[in-house]
Length: 451
Ligand code: GLU
Image 1 (cartoon, protein in one colour):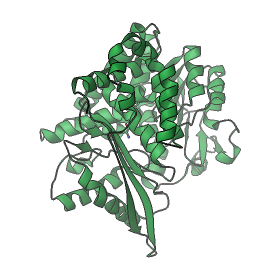
Image 2: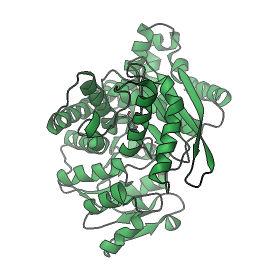
Image 3: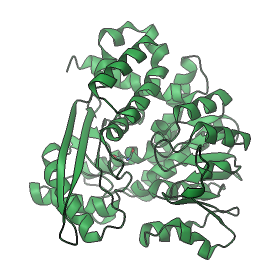
Image 4: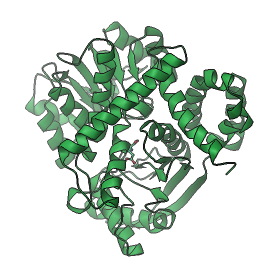
């Protein structure tokens, strides 16, 4: 445990006030105890000290002009965390909460997530403290163009493959970012993923994170002789991940009964109306409070009425929970409520959605718990499939990509599960995922020398 305390203490001095980053590091390091104890090579090669320090951090000014002619200034980031396994890969997040801590925690998670996919991709992440809410298309375009005007010099298809989406970045933003990259470099290349199907995107990329989290849940249940069939499921979020988790849950015979956005939660006993959510969130960009206009039998809870110690969405009874919104959206009190409501599975579609205390509750209760870096790896894995299609100038069918995604999610489950057993904690997928991801990256780093 000493190295955890000393590493966090050093980080607090060298990178002050980065709570989310410390949280992500602590969670990984705690799991690594069994492997670090038994193997001198990681200590001798200072792997932990090197892993927690990004290879490169880029921070830049993003000036742009709003529709009223005012000059706005945001802060842009790209953290190139670790390239031992391949070019840096990871999405962009545009959200007012973005700061160095958030981007570093996401980049750190991405190293292990990408390693778990078994694909040749390193870890990186980027974003800006830009709030797309309420902005016109023209404003979004000007922001994206300004962001790319700085970023383009740091990225490339064999160095740093930037967006796919994350919060606030979807097909529209990727289109504007790609257009500006092409204009500045004169190159039409696969430097961005999550592209439109009209110009180099991959089928299933849009659905991949949500579908993947559900496939992962199904593999966890299969290993316990159970399935998703007939299960009532709580889902948080109403973005890309949540929407396609809901879609896949229906396809697998489960009933998703909730979703949420930044303003409130919808609970619909008979099952969430997926087409309505798609209309509200993918087309009219409305908030969920209007859901009740179509479905008066649904319950809507505004954030003002959430419990003081957590989130309303986790206070309903269900067999499974899919946190698909954002970091730390599921607290210890939420975890206890889920467990007393009969929840036997949590599959994380978002990055680090459960607090450390909530995770401890799930592990202690021995329910099926799929940590984000394993359960939501389907998104980035399908980004890599998009890169492979771009590089070979091919486009695969929906069925082909979906089959590969399923296989990747299965491999991640088997790897995490086998590793947990190998280290004496069968069923502890947090431990298994962290050790398996770490081992792949750390061994590659050792083979590549002190760089
Ligand atoms: N933002 C997604 C993630 O957290 C996808 C990243 C990507 O496809 O590059 O993994």
